[in-house]
Length: 208
Image (cartoon, rainbow, N blue to C red; front, side):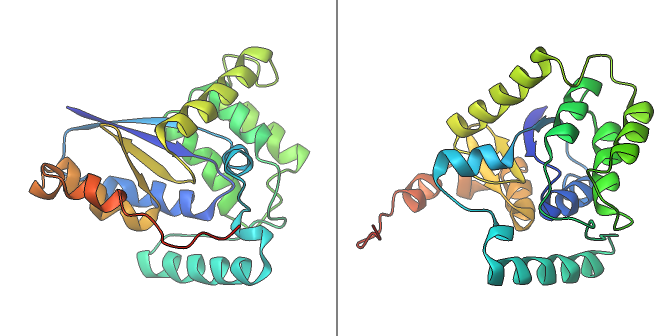
């Protein structure tokens, strides 16, 4: 059985879409999926990038794109009342409860269904009661685990979410799911030098 690490942060609409599409993408395969919450903002900061919602034209395109993707794939997606929002309480709650598929789905539906405020204190309290975390989401152990997850993701070459890690390779984004499946089913393309050669190309001009 092969193992895939799913790096996610519920702040991203593409995470919600990829999560909902993942069962279909992996149908018929013997795969263990580890869901690993990471702080997307931490990835961006470490790599000197801005998030899509921080660049106005890109923000507009992103939400038009995900709205189309949601209806195209038959997935419910309602943009929360405030976006971007601080996902730390949700990430820590998910880690404290155990980031299995059921708990992750509850967190993602909390954010991406209904158009509510994902950071609303009453809603967060209700979600916490539903998840019944065995650990304290505000405890130092959970906070340290989230930092460690984010650091490990960076070390593995993860630069955005959703990302899927398989045998030392990182597949980024909703549209990488067919590529991930191809790798899992033993495509010959991944056996030869094509993966390494494609990634070895270097730009002739770099912006400073």
